[in-house]
Image: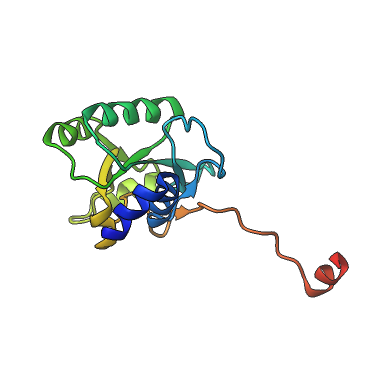
Length: 172
Protein backbone atom coordinates (compact mmCIF):
# COMPACT_ATOMS: atom_id res chain seq x y z
CA UNK A 1 0.00 0.00 0.00
CA UNK A 2 2.86 2.36 0.74
CA UNK A 3 4.20 1.82 -2.79
CA UNK A 4 0.75 2.57 -4.26
CA UNK A 5 0.59 5.87 -2.37
CA UNK A 6 4.12 6.74 -3.51
CA UNK A 7 3.28 5.96 -7.15
CA UNK A 8 0.18 8.16 -6.90
CA UNK A 9 2.28 11.02 -5.55
CA UNK A 10 4.99 10.71 -8.21
CA UNK A 11 2.89 10.13 -11.36
CA UNK A 12 -0.87 9.84 -10.87
CA UNK A 13 -1.47 8.66 -14.46
CA UNK A 14 0.90 5.71 -13.91
CA UNK A 15 -1.06 4.89 -10.76
CA UNK A 16 -4.27 4.75 -12.82
CA UNK A 17 -2.71 2.38 -15.37
CA UNK A 18 -1.35 0.20 -12.57
CA UNK A 19 -4.77 0.05 -10.86
CA UNK A 20 -6.49 -0.80 -14.16
CA UNK A 21 -3.99 -3.62 -14.62
CA UNK A 22 -4.80 -4.97 -11.13
CA UNK A 23 -8.26 -5.97 -12.42
CA UNK A 24 -6.98 -7.19 -15.83
CA UNK A 25 -8.73 -4.39 -17.68
CA UNK A 26 -7.67 -2.76 -20.94
CA UNK A 27 -6.65 0.89 -20.52
CA UNK A 28 -9.18 3.27 -22.06
CA UNK A 29 -6.60 5.70 -23.48
CA UNK A 30 -3.04 5.69 -24.69
CA UNK A 31 -0.37 7.54 -22.76
CA UNK A 32 -1.90 10.86 -23.82
CA UNK A 33 -3.03 13.51 -21.39
CA UNK A 34 -6.51 14.96 -21.47
CA UNK A 35 -10.07 14.27 -20.44
CA UNK A 36 -10.87 10.59 -20.04
CA UNK A 37 -14.69 10.81 -20.13
CA UNK A 38 -14.83 9.08 -16.75
CA UNK A 39 -13.38 5.84 -18.10
CA UNK A 40 -9.93 4.53 -17.22
CA UNK A 41 -10.35 0.93 -18.37
CA UNK A 42 -12.64 -1.66 -19.95
CA UNK A 43 -13.31 -5.34 -19.55
CA UNK A 44 -15.38 -6.95 -22.29
CA UNK A 45 -17.23 -10.18 -21.56
CA UNK A 46 -19.79 -12.43 -23.22
CA UNK A 47 -22.46 -14.01 -21.03
CA UNK A 48 -24.91 -15.22 -23.66
CA UNK A 49 -24.94 -16.70 -27.14
CA UNK A 50 -25.79 -13.44 -28.94
CA UNK A 51 -22.17 -12.69 -29.80
CA UNK A 52 -22.45 -9.12 -28.45
CA UNK A 53 -19.89 -8.15 -25.82
CA UNK A 54 -20.98 -6.54 -22.57
CA UNK A 55 -18.74 -3.95 -20.89
CA UNK A 56 -17.36 -3.43 -17.43
CA UNK A 57 -16.19 0.16 -17.08
CA UNK A 58 -13.33 0.79 -14.66
CA UNK A 59 -12.73 4.19 -13.09
CA UNK A 60 -9.76 4.94 -10.81
CA UNK A 61 -9.67 7.70 -8.18
CA UNK A 62 -6.53 8.26 -6.16
CA UNK A 63 -7.43 11.37 -4.17
CA UNK A 64 -10.48 12.47 -2.24
CA UNK A 65 -13.62 10.54 -3.15
CA UNK A 66 -17.23 11.21 -2.36
CA UNK A 67 -20.74 10.26 -3.30
CA UNK A 68 -20.55 12.59 -6.31
CA UNK A 69 -17.93 10.29 -7.88
CA UNK A 70 -20.32 7.35 -7.58
CA UNK A 71 -23.12 9.38 -9.18
CA UNK A 72 -20.78 10.37 -12.01
CA UNK A 73 -19.91 6.73 -12.64
CA UNK A 74 -23.62 5.86 -12.71
CA UNK A 75 -24.03 8.47 -15.45
CA UNK A 76 -21.09 7.02 -17.40
CA UNK A 77 -22.66 3.55 -17.15
CA UNK A 78 -25.90 4.87 -18.62
CA UNK A 79 -24.14 6.84 -21.36
CA UNK A 80 -21.92 3.93 -22.40
CA UNK A 81 -24.70 1.32 -21.95
CA UNK A 82 -22.30 -0.73 -19.80
CA UNK A 83 -23.41 -3.72 -17.77
CA UNK A 84 -21.21 -3.10 -14.73
CA UNK A 85 -19.04 -0.30 -13.37
CA UNK A 86 -16.15 -0.50 -10.93
CA UNK A 87 -14.70 2.39 -8.95
CA UNK A 88 -11.17 1.67 -7.71
CA UNK A 89 -9.89 3.91 -4.96
CA UNK A 90 -7.06 4.25 -2.46
CA UNK A 91 -9.45 5.35 0.30
CA UNK A 92 -12.25 3.43 1.96
CA UNK A 93 -15.73 4.31 0.65
CA UNK A 94 -18.10 6.26 2.86
CA UNK A 95 -21.54 4.96 3.82
CA UNK A 96 -23.33 7.38 1.43
CA UNK A 97 -21.08 6.10 -1.38
CA UNK A 98 -22.03 2.49 -0.61
CA UNK A 99 -25.73 3.41 -0.49
CA UNK A 100 -25.49 5.21 -3.85
CA UNK A 101 -23.65 2.25 -5.39
CA UNK A 102 -26.29 -0.16 -4.09
CA UNK A 103 -29.04 2.01 -5.64
CA UNK A 104 -27.63 1.15 -9.09
CA UNK A 105 -29.12 -2.33 -8.69
CA UNK A 106 -27.88 -5.58 -10.16
CA UNK A 107 -26.83 -6.95 -13.51
CA UNK A 108 -28.34 -10.35 -14.31
CA UNK A 109 -27.29 -12.71 -17.05
CA UNK A 110 -29.71 -12.80 -19.99
CA UNK A 111 -29.02 -16.25 -21.47
CA UNK A 112 -31.93 -18.69 -20.88
CA UNK A 113 -29.58 -21.51 -19.91
CA UNK A 114 -27.92 -19.21 -17.35
CA UNK A 115 -31.34 -18.35 -15.87
CA UNK A 116 -31.99 -22.07 -15.43
CA UNK A 117 -28.67 -22.44 -13.61
CA UNK A 118 -29.60 -19.47 -11.39
CA UNK A 119 -32.49 -21.41 -9.90
CA UNK A 120 -30.12 -23.91 -8.27
CA UNK A 121 -29.49 -23.15 -4.59
CA UNK A 122 -26.21 -21.38 -3.91
CA UNK A 123 -25.53 -20.38 -7.54
CA UNK A 124 -26.54 -16.74 -7.80
CA UNK A 125 -26.16 -15.06 -11.19
CA UNK A 126 -26.71 -11.48 -10.02
CA UNK A 127 -23.83 -9.04 -9.93
CA UNK A 128 -23.74 -5.57 -8.34
CA UNK A 129 -24.07 -3.07 -11.19
CA UNK A 130 -21.76 -0.57 -9.47
CA UNK A 131 -18.90 -1.89 -7.35
CA UNK A 132 -16.45 0.05 -5.18
CA UNK A 133 -13.12 -1.65 -4.57
CA UNK A 134 -10.11 -0.34 -2.68
CA UNK A 135 -6.53 -1.01 -3.77
CA UNK A 136 -5.99 -2.82 -0.45
CA UNK A 137 -8.88 -5.19 -1.25
CA UNK A 138 -7.52 -5.83 -4.75
CA UNK A 139 -4.06 -6.56 -3.39
CA UNK A 140 -5.74 -8.93 -0.92
CA UNK A 141 -7.29 -10.92 -3.77
CA UNK A 142 -10.72 -9.36 -4.23
CA UNK A 143 -11.97 -9.21 -7.84
CA UNK A 144 -14.62 -7.33 -9.78
CA UNK A 145 -17.75 -9.47 -9.90
CA UNK A 146 -19.04 -10.18 -13.41
CA UNK A 147 -20.21 -13.28 -15.28
CA UNK A 148 -17.71 -16.06 -15.83
CA UNK A 149 -18.03 -19.78 -16.36
CA UNK A 150 -18.93 -22.24 -19.12
CA UNK A 151 -21.05 -19.79 -21.14
CA UNK A 152 -19.38 -16.53 -20.11
CA UNK A 153 -15.93 -15.64 -21.33
CA UNK A 154 -13.72 -12.62 -21.03
CA UNK A 155 -12.32 -10.88 -24.11
CA UNK A 156 -10.37 -7.93 -22.79
CA UNK A 157 -7.46 -7.99 -25.22
CA UNK A 158 -7.58 -8.64 -28.95
CA UNK A 159 -5.83 -11.82 -29.98
CA UNK A 160 -3.21 -11.78 -32.69
CA UNK A 161 -3.95 -13.64 -35.89
CA UNK A 162 -2.27 -17.02 -35.91
CA UNK A 163 0.41 -17.44 -38.59
CA UNK A 164 2.21 -20.56 -39.69
CA UNK A 165 5.99 -20.66 -39.69
CA UNK A 166 5.99 -20.29 -43.50
CA UNK A 167 3.81 -17.17 -43.31
CA UNK A 168 6.04 -15.65 -40.65
CA UNK A 169 9.17 -16.11 -42.74
CA UNK A 170 7.48 -14.18 -45.56
CA UNK A 171 7.24 -11.17 -43.27
CA UNK A 172 11.01 -10.88 -43.21
